[in-house]
Amino acid sequence: MRMFASRKPLPQQSTPSTQLANGPVSLMPSPAPHVGRDFSQVPTHGAGRSVIQRKMTAAPVQRLASLAREVSASLGAPAQVTAMPHPLRQGLESMSGMDFGDIRVHRNSPLPAQARALAFTRGRDIHLAPGQEAHLPHEAWHVVQQRQGRVNATAHVGRFAVNDHAGLEQEADVMGAKAASLPASRGLPKVPPVASRPTADVAQRKIQITGLDDAKRKNFLAKINEGSVLKFDMDATGLLKEAEPGKKSIEVYSNEILGAVNDAQTVILNLVAQNDANFIDSFVTGQVDYDDMKDLPFNMFRIWLLHFVIERFAMANYEASKAGASEADFKAAHIKGHEAQERQMREWFPKKTIKFIKEGFDAATQVVDAAGNGTMDYVFDFTDVKHVFKQPVVANKAQERIISSKIIVIR
View 1: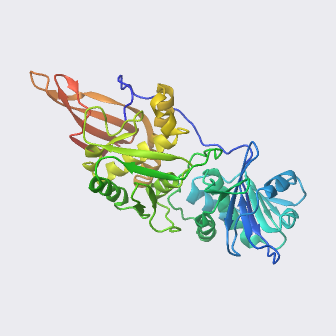
View 2: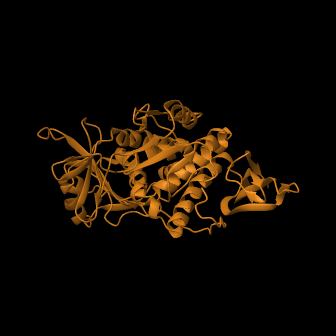
View 3: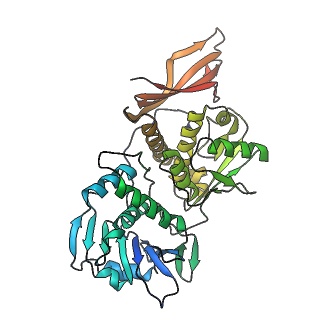
């Protein structure tokens, strides 16, 4: 967790996620008997790189990427442009944590017909063909998926990168309908935003657990799954996958881990036995201190797994780049890890102010004998909540091991 020897508190920065300039396009197909497959969500990602999301049923699926260019060139066509209806907007914002104030709904739009679709979504523009307003909640959830950067390639068809994740369409059906049905006064825990990542060098999407023996890897997986709405399986090589594909959750933890499992790059969690080189994990080696982690209480395991998983995925091509990571690289990723923790704690403590301030040893907690042996606390300060790790001190030097840990509410 603490990459550099000085272990100074890391400065807080604001690094909001952004959309790619040439964003995804989502399409709701119209019936087309002469077309063997329907396509609905067509994300496009600069430099001519395109990703197709497709589904082999008559439900909303993904169309060919060439349509993205056709539609993009026609976005200025006249239509009745309105804002998102307030009740639906309120439900979407409550569930996603995103601002839908800039979304433009183009009703009676001629463009879906040009794309042989009932509706499509590109960035902040939702186009509905005449009489197709019923598809608005579904298309609106595609906005969430695109902003989260979750439309990544899983295969290639000809010169097109393809995403065959049927779960995105199912999710848009379920979550769009749920957002539309929420009472105006009711809110739900927010789905965490996931930083957009490029798809130019798309690999298989997964977390991989390696190191130690099979029993310890399985125990680590069991800790990951403990209390989680979404469960994950592990194959013989340690690759994680959804145990129940298509199952939905509004829980922060489940969705953060799912986003990592479905990410466009592979990140390896290399389990190692307890040693004083690692405080929970090492960003530059990819090691995870198995003994530190397995002994953490449930809530601490969950929130610190989130931290170092999201931290690693925040760095492009992490596995190839980690050994040469600079302090600036680490700090930027470290902030992303803390932001994931903030999202989790806001779910746990909705009435508290949760914002990472600083981290460091608390000298006031040091208790040592004449030889300089004892303990001292390392504290992560999240404003109203603190994470406290008690560590051993040997000859007046703190050891990178954890004796105990706790989350305390201070206000």
